[in-house]
Length: 70
Image (cartoon, rainbow, N blue to C red; front, side, top):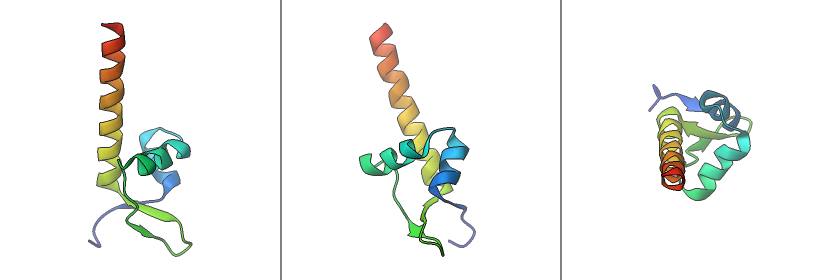
């Protein structure tokens, strides 16, 4: 567990190219789970979980776009 990469909300947003509000939206919708807090009380996410949340939401967005235009 120590060799995992941990990200704050800001880092997760920067890594995925979305806003901080979007990352919080992923949490609210259950796509991303807060795994801990850093020494300043900021929420921490596992890098792998952030990548999975991004893939899930982008895939769903593409599917909705395809259905609308098809």
